[in-house]
Amino acid sequence: MKKQLIYIMVCLGFIGFSQESPVKVSTDTTFIRIGEQFQYKVSVDKGTKVVFPKLQLDSLHKVEVITALPVDTLKNKLEKKYVLTSFDSGQYVIPQQQVLINNKKYLTDSLLINVATVKVDTTKQKMFLIKAVKSEPKILDDYLHLWWLIFPLLAIIGLILYFILRKKEKKEAVKVYIPPIQEAMQRLKELDEKQLLKQHKVKLYYSELTEIVRSYIEKDINIPALESTTNELLETIKDFNESSKLGISKETIKELKEVLQNADLAKFAKYKPIVEEIKADRTLSERILQNLKPIKNTENELE
Figure 1 (spheres, one colour):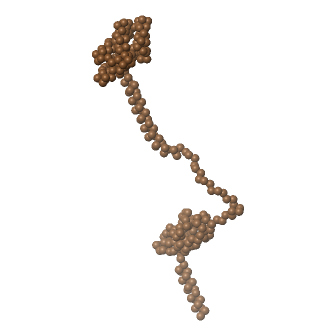
Figure 2 (tube, rainbow, N blue to C red):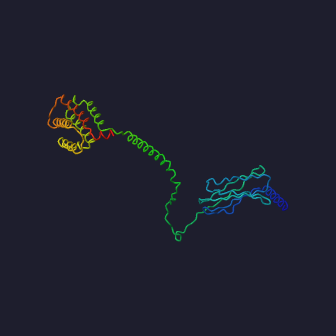
Figure 3 (cartoon, rainbow, N blue to C red):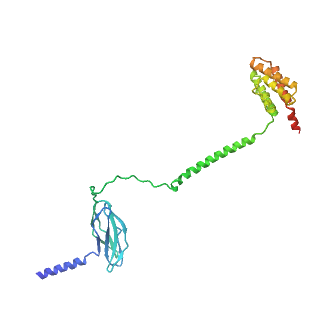
């Protein structure tokens, strides 16, 4: 009876040995602290064709693979090592992994990993306030994006200044010198086109008429005429005519006096001249302008 029992146990041992898996799994530790690393190793008896697993980790995804090392070839087996870690405390199960040996599937055992927190003794370890995020110093590259805003703005300002200055140059180039006598004759023509007499604007008509004559005297003869009274202007012309030999005839001075005095009466004495008198002053003013031209200026032009 005893011999039979011994034979049965030996047979069971041979059966268990024959069914032993060729795949084994192990770790260098099953207890780590948060952030520590540990090694997970899969060992396989040598075979003609072995495919190691792509690790399927815990269902909570708390265990992470840092790196997978190359397969080591030992005397009678192959080893594949993985470096793992975890950043959450607790117990996590690394499930069974599937390994192919000669196209046949084998499963490893599952393993339990314990992850503990790091205890801090606040009585010995001084606590500090959380510091704010410190900004990095600015470099040139940090401002390059502003160039794409500044460049179009500078281009627009440049174009605006270009057209403004160009327009100003054109305006200045258009200025052409017009002789005082020619300017005065043109202004008389423009006065006629306003038709102020038909609008019964006698004061305005005489104001513009005498202003044309006075402006010519000031520009061409260089006698202050616009701010002078009629008497002051006539006296100054007589003095200049005698001292500087302007060559203005007495008849012209007399006609100028007549026009200026008639204008003063119309503007300040409520005198209402008839149309014929006004037209006569207009004709007389044109003749005065033609005869006021100084002799010395005429002589200079002839030279």
